[in-house]
Length: 556
Image (cartoon, rainbow, N blue to C red; front, side):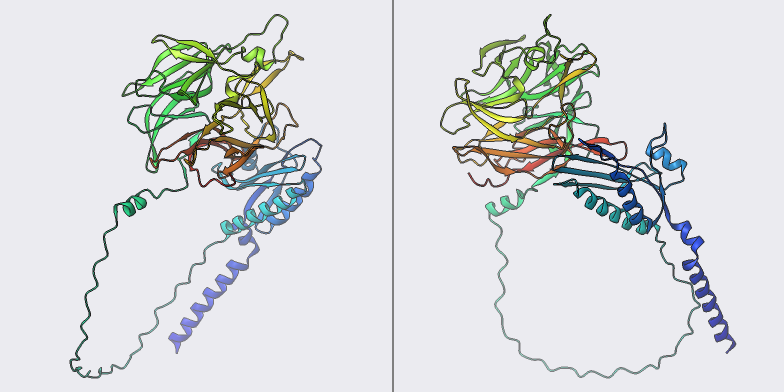
C-alpha cells in the first residue's frame, strides 16, 4: 500500500511540473522567437509609401501569434538589417521589396536568421494588379508564422516512471498438433524465365533523361555562356564567364568536371563569349569579347592545348560572334568599335559603340581579317541578329531585336520585312557612354539576348530559340531593369507571325546567356543556360548552369 502511494505521489509531482512548464507565461515567452519587422522597399511610378503601414500591421498580426514582434519604421543609420536585428536581440528579421508598374506587381520577402545571415524563408510572387501585393504579404506572413511556430515549439519529453511490477502470466502447454497426411500436389509447368530485354529496350532505359538538370550554385554571376567541343573528343563542353575567369567544364552525369580555366583580368569587362572551330583543327576556339579599363576593345581567342586554355590571338579590336551560316555552317562574325566624334558627346548606340558593318572574319594563322560584309540594314549591330532560313522557303533572312527588344525580320537583301509587337529578350548587360544631354551622367545601351535558328525536332523546319526575361519596370524607367523571371522559348514562322511553339520552365531570377547543344548524345538539342538569382537581405547573387530538354513542339 505504501509503495503504491509513493508511486502515486511521484506521478502527481511530475504532472504538476509538466503543467507549470507548459502554462507558465514566463517560460513560454522565453521559448518564443524575437522577430524584427522592417518596412519594405517599394519600386513604383507613384509614391506608395503609405502602403507600408498596412503591410507592417498585417505582418505583425500574423507573425505575432507565433513570435515576439519588434517593429521599426526605418532602418537605423549606418546599420544593415542583420546588424540592427542583433542590436535588438532579434532571432530573425523580415525584409523585402514590392515592384509595381502598370498592371504588374512583384513581391519579394525574406525571413532571415540573424545569427547565420541566411534566409530561413524566401517568398517570391507575381500578380496582375497592385492589389495583389496585399494577398502576397498575407501569404508570406502566414508562412513565416508557421515556420516560427515550428521553431519555437519545444519537443515534449516523456516523464520517467518506475518500472511496473512484473505480472505472472500462467504458462499453458501448447496443444500437440496433428501431423497432416501427405496430399498429392498438382504438377504445374515451370514458369519460363523472363526474356532478356532487347537492345532497343536496354538503350531506352539507359537513355532515360531527366527533363531539367541544374548544377551546384556558383557564387556571383555567370555573365556569358557558350558550348563547343573544346578538347576535340566529339562531345560539346560548356564555356562560361564566372567573375573574371573563362571556365570550360564538361557534364559528367550529375556533376560538372572542370577542364580548364583562364583568368581574363579583373581590369577587363567581358561582354560576350562564343565558341566554334573556325581554324579547322577539330577543337572549338573560345572567343572572348572584352573591353579594357579605357573602354577599348581588347578581345582574345583561347584554345585548349590538352592541359590548359592558351591565347592564340590577343589584343583583337573586334566584337566577336559565332553564328551558323545556312551555306557554310559555323562562321565567325565581327564588328569594330566606334569612338565619339568632336560633335558627338556619346550616347548614340551606333556611333559610340559600333561602327557600321558586320563582317565575316577569317583566320590567317596570325590574325583575323575582315571578309565579306553581311547584307544587313546599316544600323544593325552584331549582338542583335542571327541569319537562317527563317521563313522555311530556302532563302536566308536575318531575324533581329530592335533597341526595344522587339523582333524584326529583314529580306535576303537586308530590307525590313516583318516587325513584331511583343517584347522578348531582356539582358542586364549594358555598355555605357557619356550622356549626350547631361555630362554628369552616362547613357546605358543594353545588349540583347541571342537568337539561334535551328531545326529542333528534325522535321526540316527551322525554329528560332531565344530567351524571354520578364522586366517588371516594363520600360517605364529607362535606366532601370529588374528581371525577376526568365524562360527559354522557341518560335516558328506561321506565314503571318513568329509563333511560340515551345516554352521552357520559368525560373526565378533571370537567364544571362544560353546556347544549344546535344550534351547527352540522344541526337536532339538541349537548351543550356546560365540562371542568376538573388538571395538574402543583401540580395547576394548566385548562378547555376541549367540543361533543359526541349520537348514536343506545338502549333506549328
